[in-house]
Image (cartoon, rainbow, N blue to C red; front, top):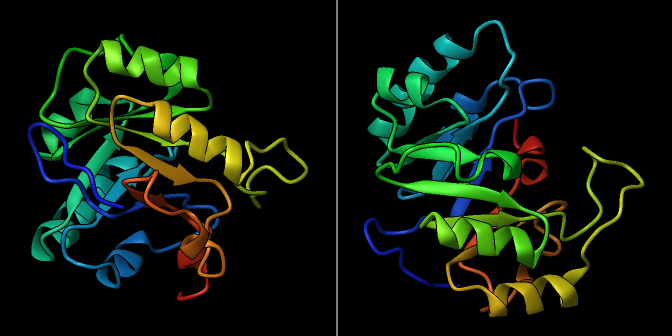
Length: 184
């Protein structure tokens, strides 16, 4: 699970926030390894700016990256390391230091490649609590998509301590929320 982005070393682990399920992402970030990344999502949370500031302090203190989802103004304001873009936002934001993008297909990955994203989070690989009963890519299809990609791909969606070992070298790493809920 190792590929390198052209500009910045890639994290092996990415933890997107979900303040409804992971009530203290700063505490969870403290348990992540040095070099990991945290993506502040929660776009409409009333305390998003305060969480961005708190996470910036927490990640900087631990040698971790902070990415802000879909909000370059907030990312600049807190001096985030980069941006994470929803699939529909790819191509709508000017280049940044480091950009990850959500992808649910090889076509979405191709769009991220065109705008020179540094990596993509491919989901959902496994069944996930955030979308119960939703369709998944499945491990074999997700691996095939990751192998065909021209940029680093992270597995996301239902990744937990029991299945992370199944991912293999097709992925640069993994992104998970569920895996960090158990340690709150």
